[in-house]
Length: 165
Image 1 (cartoon, helix red, strand yellow):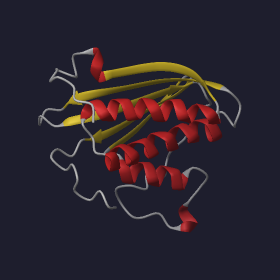
Image 2 (cartoon, rainbow, N blue to C red):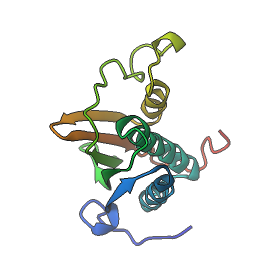
Image 3 (cartoon, rainbow, N blue to C red):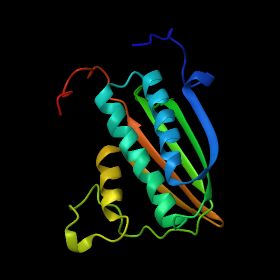
Image 4 (cartoon, helix red, strand yellow):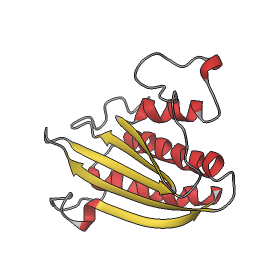
């Protein structure tokens, strides 16, 4: 494992990654690599990294499939390490697309009652997966697209716990 000297990751460029791409299905590999880099810098376990990458990949797939309808489209992506008011480390993943505005009313399958097969609409299972992994999932409808924010609160001191899952 690579060891980094202790830095204020939130204030340094080490704790931030940002890029723009024309999304197509094969770009998920680039995105996955970026998530792995920021997760390594934050000290996530391999299991946590894989789970977070799965949620980020799923949102990207939704933007590609449902937002742009499998046609190339512009996506801006930013990730950063943030320290919240409780001193906990968080990973923030922000997506900005220029696809048609999405109405996500009723898509939140994370906090209240579990989604049943009858409740699932296109994108519903993916959104349920994203909500089950991320601590915060936010969507803002813009005049010319969508802004998505995923936040994962790092589980301090859990390295090795539950790795067999």
